[in-house]
Amino acid sequence: MYNPKSLKAEEFICHEEVLDTLAYAEENKNNVALIDQIIAKAKLRKGLDHREASVLLACEIPEKINALYALAHQIKLDFYGNRIVMFAPLYLSNYCVNGCVYCPYHHQNKHIPRIKLTQEQIRNEVIALQDMGHKRLAIEAGEDPVNNPIEYILESIKTIYSIQHKNGAIRRVNVNIAATTVENYRKLKEAGIGTYILFQETYHKESYEKLHPTGPKHNYAYHTEAMDRAMEGGIDDVGLGVLFGLELYKYEFAALLMHAEHLEAVHGVGPHTISVPRIKRADDIDPNVFDNGIDDETFAKICALIRVCVPYTGMIISTRESQQVREKVLPLGVSQISGASRTSVGGYCEEVRPHESEQFDVSDSRTLDEVVRWLMEGGYIPSFCTACYREGRTGDRFMSLCKTGQIQNCCHPNALLTLKEYLMDYASDETRAVGEALIAKEIHNIPNEKAKAICEAHLGSIADGKRDFRF
Image 1 (cartoon, rainbow, N blue to C red):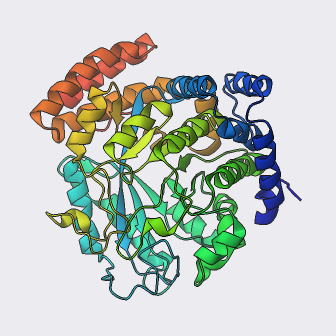
Image 2 (cartoon, one colour):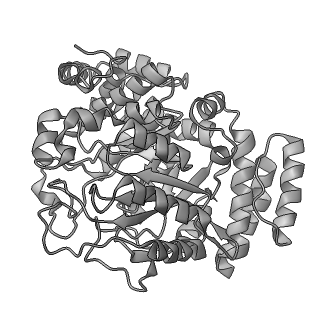
Image 3 (cartoon, rainbow, N blue to C red):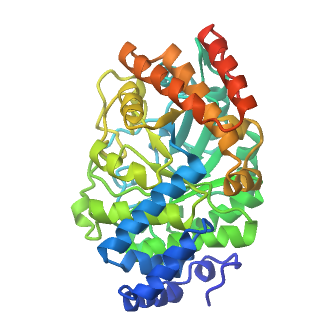
């Protein structure tokens, strides 16, 4: 029985409800009156439920899809402006006891080199990331209670936060590790993490169990209920995601929205972020083995729909996607991207990108400087801001500001200040010139005159060598 307020995975992600939703969407994909009604509701900026969203996903009427894309673009501007938050993943260890058939870190892979960073190696990796200009990291590690216990993760977080190098500092550490206990989530909260991220991979239980044949990740309910335990442990912000290509995308899309609805219904706070990775080639993994891959047009439609259906969420596109694909989806609601990512353990200290321990092939291999300049030339503000997290604007406090649009009064000036820091400390001459022109133009888009004056004063102080101002 479907119940979004239930704490049981098979009740808030109800298989029968997903199937009924897909049948309803198929029946109504050409129902213009209903589609217009759903789009009109979406324009209220309050989101759509999984059933309404699935109708729009099934719809193939060109003018309705164009209307959806235009609305997604406008909603992104309304909630997040033209800012794009920058981050990088940091892989700590690829030791893993699970048998996930789509990941090269799976336990049966005997030829991939297994690496676990020491705290000194983590320090070197972080300095390499700081020297690029990164301020926000997402740490990743395989599930291995012997090699990667929670104590190792906590020690690594402490190390990362402790490193002050020149003008570099990591100001926010997000964590993407396996489902764990309430007690361990409490420890992560105490360690000062930002968002706890866990991808579902697939919400289809039968497929999930086949794709995870061995290891603790095989337990569908334990994995799917992880976000509830994380929130019980005091973590304010959680990030959802599915790995598109493992199961039929319409099923995954409906279930993903059901998970978001569940978090809102139970905790009063939906997902802080939603990621939309697609399966990619890596070591002994051939994505062509999985026959549910989605093309770029479908991928773009999913991105637009997530923005329209969950308007407050941060949407993340990683370097799994090429520059061309990222260009296509940026106007459709994306608010965070990674830059200069290396998906191998210890990869940032290597001059040449190592491939033998990558979790997946990186499609966008540009430097952070190149990505920053590309964004600015496209009219976006690359933001290295972590102010909300450090000012305690997390969970329901962040959501209430975001949903009312008040977050703009903090975010726009903060984005300009952190961009100015980047330009002064890390940018090439060409990128700095583009950035200074952008800041001079965007300063006039701060609606509050007092905030504008303070921002201008802070920008001058940054030019004089001071750092870390925030609204």
